[in-house]
Amino acid sequence: MKYLILIYGNPVSRQTWAELSDAERSEGLRVYAALDADLAASGELVVSEALADPAQTTRVSVREGRPLTTDGPFAEVKEQLAGFYLVECESSERAVEIAARVPEAEFGLVEVRPVLDLGAMDAWPE
Image (cartoon, rainbow, N blue to C red):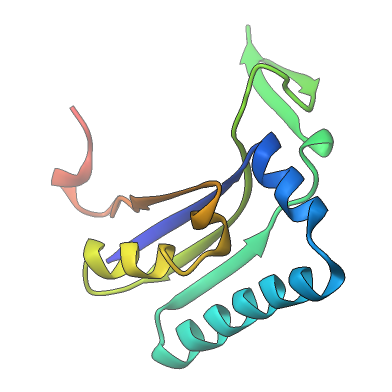
């Protein structure tokens, strides 16, 4: 089954990363590289990406058939999506185990969410 591991940042986690020394930041990036390598080697990694600064965000909504856009960042949001892993693994417990290896799990928020199999009729929420 596929799971999306969402990595969120917030003012505290962004400040924590900003205050790290170059060596500490390099170590954090090394942890990410090791996680990517381990998941690739096990065949569980589908894709992993970091996201650009939230200030580059554009919200899109459609009203009366016309797209409307609003540029970010969006101050009312405390947690902002910073990156993600899409993994394919045997269980939600394994996905949680992977998520616990994400450095932000120690001071931010990491969420694990199953990916719906849209081909399965029983996957649709009621």
